[in-house]
Length: 208
Image: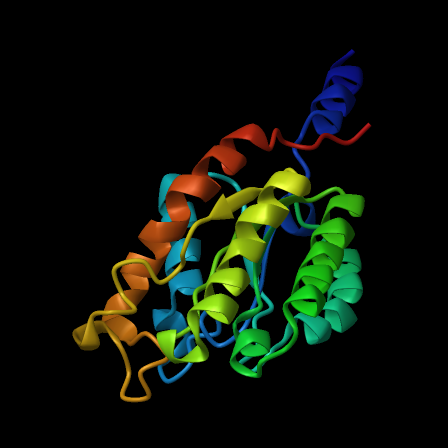
């Protein structure tokens, strides 16, 4: 009888590790560009989750300079390896800075979302804005992509990762594009209200 009860208990243990991971796929804004990686907002997210004992690991697959096309190339292997419950998708800024046609950016982001959803992950799309010197038509069209995809693909969205940071010189590095170490907690606070409900909704997986 004891062995039977022990067997049942083992079957009910939540799967941990890769099956309970959050995968962050981003560019330099999520790769802690210009600072130690443990000061970046993704590292702070890992700390917050550990403190709150939420039960998720955080995998940061962000690379400085990454584009949506690069993300499409890398994401399938990352999904297979980590099997994330949640995919935080923070890409598009480098596409916009290079003047990539908006339909291409939209198509690539849609493809990334679909890849994540097909792998069983809940997707959080992180909105980005471009500097005003790119012209209002392109800049506003670029930003609108994130809202459009959030609705059409039925995914949660962070309106703007750099809210309260981008226009504050004290929170930006000298290049005017990247947030400094002091800004990282603000970035996390911009993401957290949209990520936290997803954590609560992602019920534990069970063996059996």
